[in-house]
Structure formats: structure tokens, C-alpha cells
Image (cartoon, rainbow, N blue to C red; front, top):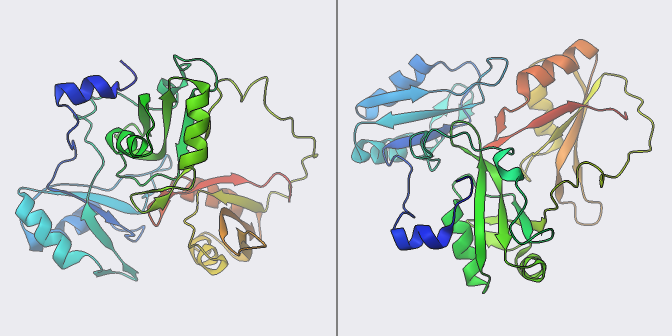
Length: 301
């Protein structure tokens, strides 16, 4: 089955935490950090069973690692000792890794293709839940919905091939009216410290129903658009990240004019097209404060 039927899972007692309790997430590590270096650092805290540093399509580090210890006691000691530890010119984040292992998801690749099936109740019954914490699970979402008096038919958190959450989910309700009620009541509500986005998800809207962009493209090839940024990201933060690949002429973290709150995206202008392409190839998918950046060439600069 591609969808999780929560009523069946609850009765079967299957809604348990599938993350390995002795596995730690190590964030904000320098791009140059190797697996052996990370292993040596954490070996001081106990018996390290396994270490991994995920990489993007170009083989570049995504800026975080996974360290698994032999026991939960050693893992807890590592969190206490290493969280906030200086590694190179960075301060690393160390916490329990909440993402399920490949074995926990049955080795299945959970992605957008799995989630594209039409909801049982028809159009208007499915909602998109965005800006989720990485540790948010299907059980977390159904519990949250239940707290608002909403009955969930089925739901699934979108995940990468390794099982780590993509930060969003699709949730089905019995009727379009219930889905609309969920949007009105739960949009901007708090789930595990994050203000979530809830909107209707319409299958196929990206094809015939998509809005046609009428503005002509006029790209210089020098500027990139960076999306999925943390709300706290400033223009100076963007400059510091991308000056690693070339001379940054200008960097702007876009904000709402009335509130000054970040819109979650920004632009970076380079001196040459080669630098802009290097930024896309080197940083697309790399995490900035636990959020994988989505980078494309600006088509309208």
C-alpha cells in the first residue's frame, strides 16, 4: 500500500517510533568534513557503529551527518557533550535523528510519484501540509488533526529515498467540506514548534489548470533564486554561503514589506555565469540550518 491507513495502524499497534534511538543527526558541519573525521570526533563519546555524510548529485556534502552508536546511553552522552561544539569555523548541532531508517520504511522509495494518486473522496478532499519539522510523522499529523476535531482518512509524509522527511505531507479527508474546514482551522497552527501551511491539493493542477506565465524570460545567467530558506536567513547569510563559489555582487533575502518577515527565498547575483552555475551544482539540495535549499537560475533578472 502506498498510503498509511491510520485507523488500521492504531488498532494494530504499529504507530511506534521507527527511528534508531542510538542514531544522531549532526548538523551544520563544514562542507569539507569527511566520514573518518566525523567518526574520530564522536569516538571520544563511545562506540561508534556507523557514520554517514549524505551528498548531493554532484557528490558534495549536504552539510550534515548521521552518527550511530552501539548504545542509547552513548548517544545521549554524545548529545550532551557535542551539541554546540565548534567544528572548524562552525558550531554543530547534535540531536537524536528522528528520520526512519530504510528498513523501517521497508526499503520503499517514498516520493512524489507515490503521492500522486487521486484521493478516494475526489477533488478537493486532499490537503497539502507544508513547513513541517523533519521529525513530524504521519502519527503526529493525525494527532494534530484530531485535536481540532478533524477525521483523517489517510495521510503520508513525503520522504527522500533514504527515509528522511522532505518537510511536507498530503492528508486526505472524507469530503471537500472537511478539507476546507481543516484549512480554515489549522493553517498557521503550530506543530512541533513550526507554523504549518495547510492548503488544498488538487491533483493535476500542474498540467491543464496551471497558470501560464506571460512575462517574457530575460535571464542574464548571472543570478540564481534560492528557495526553502530558513525564516531567519538574512542577506548577509546568503552572501557568506555563496561567496564560497565566487564573487557575490549582491545577495537579497526577500521579506514582506509590511511585516519584515522572510518569504523563505532570496536571490544571489554573481560576477560570471560560470559562478552562478557552480552555485547551482554545488549547493542545490544542500541543507542550510536543516532545510535543503532549492536553487535555480533566475529567468527574469
